[in-house]
Amino acid sequence: MKDYLKKYWTSLCVMIGMAIFLTACGGGDGGEESSAETDTTGNEENGSQEGTIGEKHSFKLGVITPPDHMWHQAAEKFKEELEANSDGRMTLEIYPSGQLGNESDMLQQIESGSLDFGFITAAEISSREEAFSAWFTPYLFETIKDAHEARKSDVAQEMLTTLDSYGMKGLDYLFAGQRVMLFKDKEVKSPADMEGLVLRVTPSPPMLEFYNSTGASTEGIPLPEVYSAVQTGVIDGMDMDLDATITNKFFEVVDYGAVTNHMVWPSVAVVNADIFSGLPEEDQQTIKDSLETAADYAVNTRFDQEEEFKQTLSDEGMTIYDLDKEAFSKQIQNFDKIYKGKDPLIEKFITEFRE
Ligand code: BEZ
Image 1 (cartoon, helix red, strand yellow):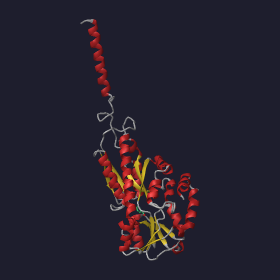
Image 2: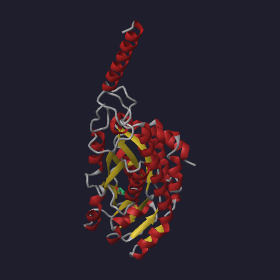
Image 3: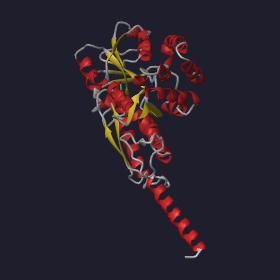
Image 4: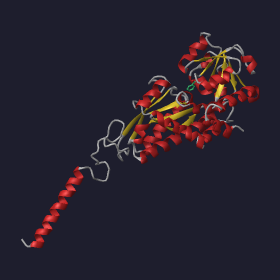
């Protein structure tokens, strides 16, 4: 063989050999054919945080409320959007009614990665990060649409980032109706009428602070135990939203509903941080967009249901009446003073949104 032909065949063989070697080492384009293995959280075993494009994912989401509550409907909307926007590649199974345990259990499952997503009340989340208490500042927002807009503010987004240190990522907020007050057998018109009553409040410090300042005694009872507590006379009334008053049939055991709308009631959409960061950016964006559509759907639907819900409860025999902000001006001042001093994010939040 001529010299130049020998050189040509030798370099051709070297090039083919290198190409085979690089392919075997996973030096491809990182697409579906990537040989890097994924563990159960979607993280690549080589330590990279970037997930594989085009991979299938089946997620689980837990929520405390029953299927006819707005948060469950929002979860259904999230599922529908996620599955449609990913052409069925990402799927979601929803576990409502606390099937996976109470909110504290679900939060632990998300932190450990045994549950992917949760819609968890800001009240429960504030047990991790006090800043979330800011959402329970009394009479800060006139309507849930105002609160829905406020969730985009820098301060509300900053709050979400505080969850990073718990192995979770806070993605968004979803609103159900505002809080109202239900009383078993007394038409309460002012804080003075609340003195001596035992009222159920979600076991969350800012909510307890507000009620204790009215002169009522408070019991921190989780949602599933409230019906029997009021039925058996352990409590004289409760802090609730109209949605849960209907879905939990509290109208069977209380006679009076004061529509105070004194606090908004967000749930926080959270995801396990490793699971989320193990996804490629485009899947992360699909999740965020799908959640945003679900959050818009929830607030708009719920906003339009206000009068219908009041009517439903009147039809069930309850006396439903409005009770204005002015009745609670002392309690509002007291709350702002105490909570502004608790955390810089709370101070920023109250200062930004108090009119
Ligand atoms: C509550 O604890 O009052 C509650 C929790 C979730 C949804 C609605 C109400």
